[in-house]
Amino acid sequence: MLWTASNDEAVRRLASEGTRPRLPWAKQVPVFRTQTAAALPILDLLYRDESETVRRSVANHLNDISRADPDLAVRTARRWLKKPDENTPRLVRHAMRTLVKQANPGALTLLGFSSADDISIVLRHSLVTSCHWAVNWSSKASSSMKDRTPRVW
Image 1 (cartoon, rainbow, N blue to C red):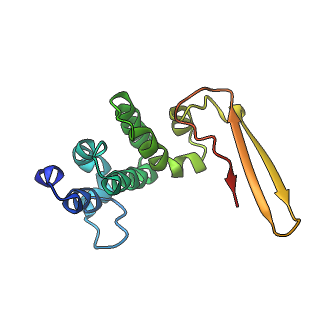
Image 2 (spheres, rainbow, N blue to C red):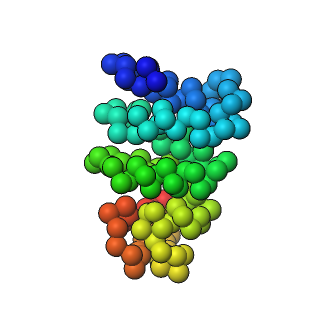
């Protein structure tokens, strides 16, 4: 846990990255694959870090945990949202991305949706000079977690 207090953001990021259960760029530590909660004390110290790079690593780490133990990931994110800073909602949205794609009820509720029935999606396309798709969504639920920015592809 000493690394989480380092003045060097690269060392703090390593504390998160090195304990990821699905570490993509180095040899994985087996204990973190089988005991996904083992690294939570480290993440608890880093989720409000001043560095965007460290917070992004924490979000990716929690996303990894969500693949093995969705309930643990949702409980952790919910706990963090009880003691947030201004960056915590963004971190949680990024961390819950896999569960949202899977329509996980706990993750959707955490992000402000009471059920999939509350979500409305409108697709628009234009083939005038090139193909553009815009997706706007809305919800009956009100939450600061929602990002209502239209996505254009």
